[in-house]
Picture 1 (cartoon, one colour):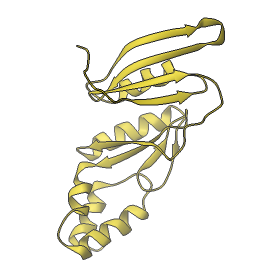
Picture 2 (cartoon, rainbow, N blue to C red):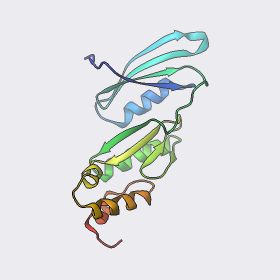
Picture 3 (cartoon, rainbow, N blue to C red):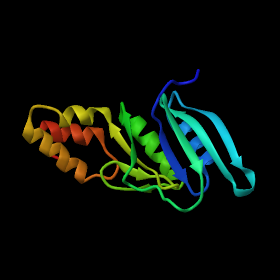
Picture 4 (spheres, rainbow, N blue to C red):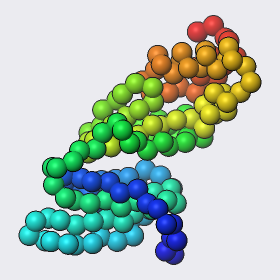
Length: 158
């Protein structure tokens, strides 16, 4: 079924757009490759349309003029620690690099924020002291740990 989404994120790759799209769609449910568009076979110039967690993305294999960086990232809401661990570990095993505060950069340079769904509730809660404890906990982590964030929210000793 084709999406009727009017706006899509477009990702520029030096090389490997199709490989990246296939990897990305393996990480999340409701994801698939829609099409691969060959523009110039001799120059290895092509595009990929893919669905990631129900949202359309486009990727272009277009050369080294532009690089992916932390200015744009994918925010992935995870329901539990197992989902965080699965996505995080898959990105690392595929050549990714850990970064602070729940960020991990894949081998193509795209950054992912692998975030527990509960974090938004904690940071949006009415207790300012609890929110500050959670932020301090996040700032001290690489991969986010839901149990430690919940402890921080409750004010439990580490």
